[in-house]
Length: 139
Image 1 (cartoon, rainbow, N blue to C red):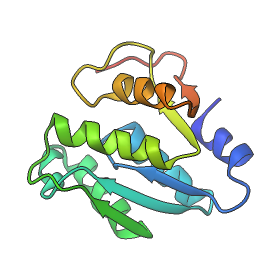
Image 2 (image 1 turned 180 degrees about the horizontal axis):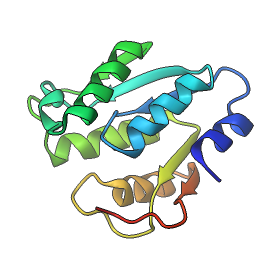
Image 3 (image 1 turned 90 degrees about the vertical axis):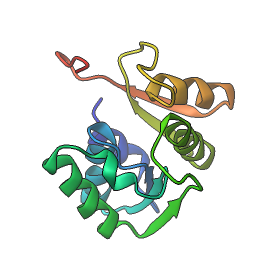
Image 4 (image 1 turned 90 degrees about the horizontal axis):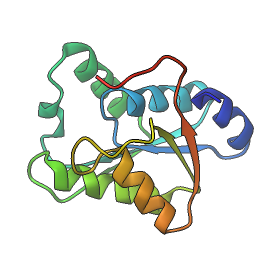
């Protein structure tokens, strides 16, 4: 099942999507929430988070989604780092009713990755939906 399919089934009333707007799946999720007519709440891991986006397309997507977000929470970290990413993932998991994770089932490549967030959400009894498109691979 794809992100848009999950949102169509689960997000019929008062859809709010929480995301840190990270490159890749987080940005895809953000655009999918908006396309479904939902409210986007950006959980920004740190001040100067935008500096972590090295490619112009991912930086542009971050900037666009940040501007379109109806709410923004900036976590109290001065720079983007693994502790900030982990805190953002925990914040998303703590606030969500359903965690949609685009995940291959492998451990996180770095602290604060999807595997860490899924483990945290599982430990808290969250409803988790795993999405991994056929033919996808990690970079």
